[in-house]
Length: 111
Length: 112
Image (cartoon, rainbow over all chains, first blue to last red; front, side, top):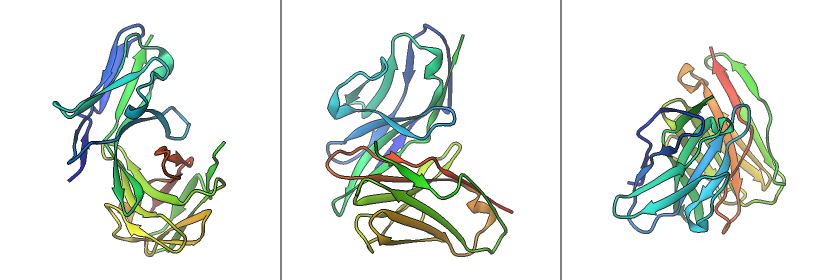
């Protein structure tokens, strides 16, 4: 079955330090993977998707098929990066996109 | 901008009550979803719909039903609310092939 695992419920780093939020998945086939973010008092929104290979707000994520991972990285954390982060995997059922989410990681950036 | 709205931000109900959560999107999206969000469990899919009057069970449909009579509106129904249904409920919509799901602000439901 499709599954997404985020091993860290909480992650705390200092401002300016590198950040890595871990995501591992199990999927039969070529996965479409996403990172979603929820800032305090805001709605959940897409941060980035692996097919775009883009950097958003300084974050990047590389798909490693050998390790079945899609870790989110940022070289220098900012206080505004404090938020809840969810890794998600796309599954297609009857032509409808369904997302399978991980448990989430709450990232706190300390000043 | 895509707008997904949910009828209530906060809701308090009693055990056994029938509860309706409404979700409306204004972008003519075909696919709509209901999730519940719980600490440590992430988002879990309850039901989704890929067309009017069509519905599919998600991963945790027990105790819930849905209704989609119009394209823009997707309702989640708790037939007889129980305390273990206390949670944050999120609605989302999307249209292929863009993959991005657009979320509503959420409804925090407390069942006493």
